[in-house]
Length: 116
Image (tube, rainbow, N blue to C red; front, side):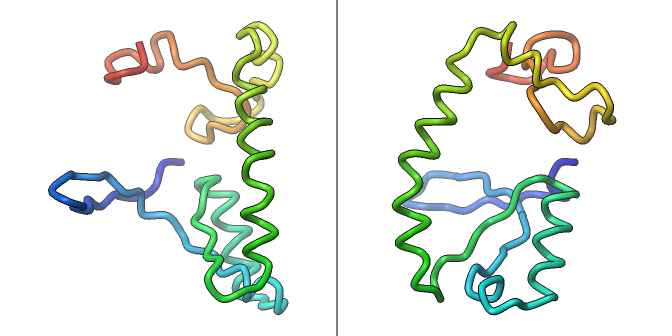
């Protein structure tokens, strides 16, 4: 499911589209906040994406230190042949859920600028 709407932010005269996603506070998760855990679960189930607020926790350094490895693994995954990634397609879900690998070419994505 796509975010419900989007906003536009102007930065140095440049228009930047920004998705309106749920913001999850890592410090509240670490403190065991049931409300924040529920927000995380719902965001993961509904859109599959969320902003992670690292400002109020000492764990932010650990998270940020892991980013280069995360990016490297992501790049390695997407550098694979499409035939390999297609093994990760989730046929047991509605198209609006978009979990697993989705090939961005074909009729489902026709007409979307930059994808074909």
